[in-house]
Length: 384
Image (cartoon, rainbow, N blue to C red; front, top):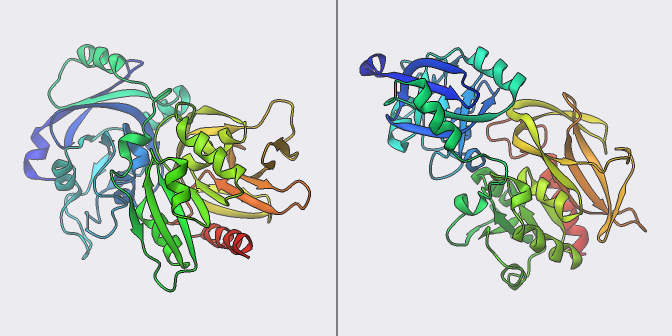
């Protein structure tokens, strides 16, 4: 925290009127978004640069944030995407040899308005009880009532189509680190850099296309498989990509989806999605892989989830035009569906799958890296 930081005041107001006062942290000004909390004790740089956090104001539950500063290696994209940042006790001096600047300096460079000195435990408890909601942070407004009105006038997350706001402007290729074994088209809905890197480590040539890519553009690359990335927004408002995925499934193209890609996979298979009360965000979420019986600690960032059809047991498959879909993973905290798999009803062979969490381990943990190997196995079977 810089010396003049202590003289700058900031105001945080939730849409239900709950108000917090604190010190300005990061850029000056005013910002609005959906208030969410992240439970990770490390990895704040990966959080800040994750496009899935677009239009979200992130409350860090870990009380001490910024002690490792910011470096030039750990970013998951070219910029910070969070709409705002809330911390309790920001580090005054970074203590990592990799740091090139403080977190406060980086937030200012990126224009991210934040607030520190806030009772983040009370704020998190409020969001857990009342649910994620719109919020405003201001360093220029002292009147809570005036800021509250602007919060209530701001856009909600439900019904928002945001993938096209964070996607790449132009296609690009991530080359494999060794010999090319497969070619995969990755639809960038808010992709993290480490995701492509994990596939490249396994001999996959990754062709990253914008979220607006057409089926013709995908097929022109003659891919061995299709991948949908994580991303922000309401899956119910993201329709073109669902139609693209259905067309790919009709052609038997192996599919792997992460996070937002899991929600769109569910919708492509005829399932519904819904908004969670306060979502899962952090790098310590326990998930059961129902196909192996193993429990893994996983990284999450999602406010929406796939709904299983009413009246159908979670152990039972659901028939779709593309095969039978089953629940492959569940969250052990609240039984939310965390993964889907599509199988041929006659042979039982896996043809496509998705998970709601982040197996790329940025920032950690590494329990779920086997999912990239599972994708490679699918590609091998398809290629023969």
